Structure formats: structure tokens, C-alpha cells
View 1 (cartoon, rainbow, N blue to C red):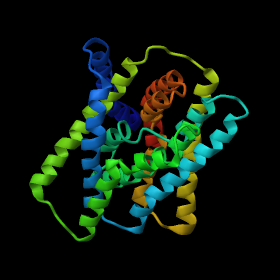
View 2: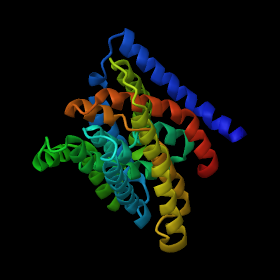
View 3: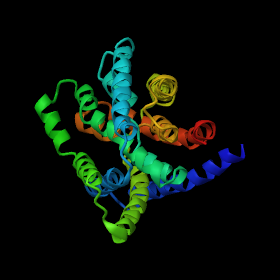
Length: 306
């Protein structure tokens, strides 16, 4: 129980930063549209580049993004199918996106920095690429529901800078390129910026919500997908790997668990707004899942991450 409170205490400052972001958006007229491009196109690619550059490459570290992508697609399609028995509009589309995605970036990376050492942190970041690819492939298709063509979706994926950062870092890693202490010190600064801006961006997103629409069924099934089914899939994958395949090193399991227990992705709001697929429901689901994660993550971390 002591460990639970230790982890909880480490998470509370992140929620204070979310609160500051909310205040900035509500009363200082700071717009999330001015912060998001910095994290998406500059800071996040640098962090991903550093992870692929400095992580010791092995079959396990390179297989992790693929496993995450498979779980994301499986969960997405399963809840898209389930949703047709409950809703007859595009609610099932945004539910499917929620079921497949997760806030592994803005929320997960700051938590990983708190919980893990440098090695496991980089492995975690590599694993999150599976969700980046899901969100911009199957996740986008399901949410759009035919309003966007395959070509448009592929062009969107091609503009995602984190993929190029990952590939460039991977190539340099293979050739054994080292960039020195000045580079490593600078990346540490970017990591700190990502924590601050990423968590504040959640608060800015909450501040921009104009209308809260509470759909108990939608919220309940979203929580089921994100906080029960995702961890269940990941724990099953770990169990199978432990008994049969032995692809992943045991220390990687903690990164895999964290990927599976983060709250609903902040990008859900962006996608829902852009495609006009119940953005109010999506915003409220993101907010409630982020609040729930304050207590949920310390419990799971106490049971499975240490």
C-alpha cells in the first residue's frame, strides 16, 4: 500500500500541470491549436528519434510496436462490431477509435519518465509507435466512415513526422552513430518540455469544451475497452510470450503494461472534431478517463510494474 501512495504522489504533479493548462485555456485565452503543433511536429519526433537512436536493438524491441498495433486493431474492430447492436449512428465509430487508441504520448510518456529508467523508457516510446500508426490508418478509416478516401488517409500517414524520426534514428543506431553529450543534454530538455506542454495540452483541451453531454452507456463501454479489455489483451500476450515464444525480455513487460493502461487518447477529441463525430462525447470521455487514471494507474503499477 505504501508503494501505491508513492506512485500516486508522483502522478499528482502531472494533474496539477493539467489544471494549470485548464486555467491558461479558460482565463488566459491560450489555445491548444498553438501548442499542439509544437508537440506533434517538433518535440515528439525528437523524443522518438532519441529512443530509436539509443535503444539497444533486438527482436523484442522491434516487435513491440507491431504487437501494440495488432492489439489496437483487434480492439477497434471488436468494439466497432459490438457498437452496431447499441447505436445506429456514428457513435460506434468514435467508440471503435477509443477502443483501439490510448494516450501513450501526452500522458503516458510523462508517467513512463517517472516510473522507468532510461532503458525501459526508450523501449516504451518505441512501443507507442504502434498506436501512432493505428490512429492514422485503421483508426482514421473507422472514424471517418467513408468520408475520406484511402489516398487522403495515406497522405496523412505520410506527413506524420514521428515515423521519419523513428526511421532516421534506427538507421543511425544500426551504424553505431553517437551524437555526444551536448546532444544528450539537449534531448533531456526536450523531454522536460514534452511533460509540461503535453499535460497542459490536456487541460487546454478540457477548457475548450463548450457542451458536456453525458452518455452513461458510451462512457461505460469506453472504460470497459480502455481499462479492462486493453490490459487483458496485453496480459494475455505477456503470458503467451512467457510460456511459448520468449520474444520479449522480462524487463520489457512493464513497458507493455503501461501502454495498455493509459487513459483515452487526447487525439480522440481532435479526430472527432475534425470529422464531426460526436466531439462532445469524446471530450467528456477523455476527461473522465484521465481523472480515473489518477487512481487506476497506481493500482495497476503496484500489481504489475514493480
